[in-house]
Length: 388
Ligand SMILES: *Cc1c(COP(=O)(O)O)cnc(C)c1O
Image (cartoon, rainbow, N blue to C red; front, side, top):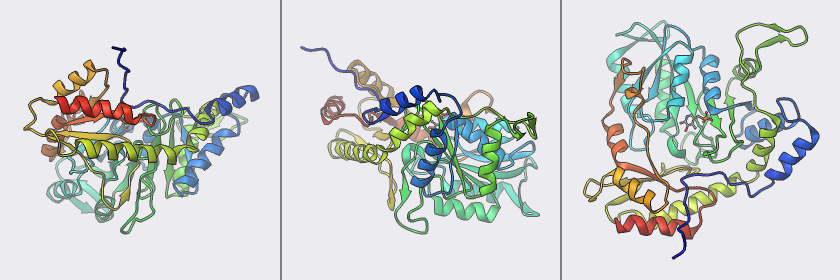
């Protein structure tokens, strides 16, 4: 029998003009933070999500840090965040010397508007247009919404709450480039463009990649300008090295932008492929052998970035055993994130409504979803899962 092929969880796909564009950039010798491709890539992303401009940065994490500073998050303020997500969505709150308040999820795995509302009703009051935490006395100034696995959060409900409590809305859209609402008040609106600030990531496992990289968009032109300023060392007078605040070197390079431009040409194709393989898994696994394939929100076009296999309690195996058995078959999968409220340094922060988050954490396995996953590979994943 031939050696079994390794099926990775999520890897890059460079079947477009990546090599050509990167080669051109190297030949031109514009490989660092100068060059024409960074603004070109910024415009490509902005045009795609229908925003006036994008501000490139060197990771989604630095983009989220910029978002905190754009929103004026600082000492004495607090930020509502999801407890079920990747830690990069929350750490920037601490970089900005503020504190997170952890909120549980709904069935979309995204932050639950009803839990946010319950928490605020019980623990906050409005004072001079500020949402004040009655327990800590701090100003709850913003909410971070993560569109988990490319699935849009309940933005109509979240935006209503943000308006009522005067909260800045930061959309962590690092997993959701290409997802948009098709129905309702936000029909046609892309993930990242509904709140005040949106952040995308081009890390290697995301739907498109620049190796590492990120992009910030904002519905406030001056906030976007501020993000550009902060990400380029806050130069007030470039020639004379005058800086008017503490800035950062969060720039993307021309080489990375070359990759990004080639990837953007393929984004819609990637999404179509992800959708097709999702439908394949759904057909063969949903409702079979105590599995469910979790759906994406109705009234949206999701980018289908990650697929969630939900393992019912009635299944003879627990999550970790399933992951291990797949690993023995050279199929890479993973559990979802341990809750951030349980991570080092976050034990003392307020939290509310984590029951469903723990439940999903214990029951979900992410299964292979690369944009170059073949039907043959997916069939092997299905066959192993059905044999367990
Ligand atoms: C990937 C990711 C980030 C961080 O992006 P990087 O580019 O890896 O820094 C932030 N939040 C979430 C939810 C992510 O999945």
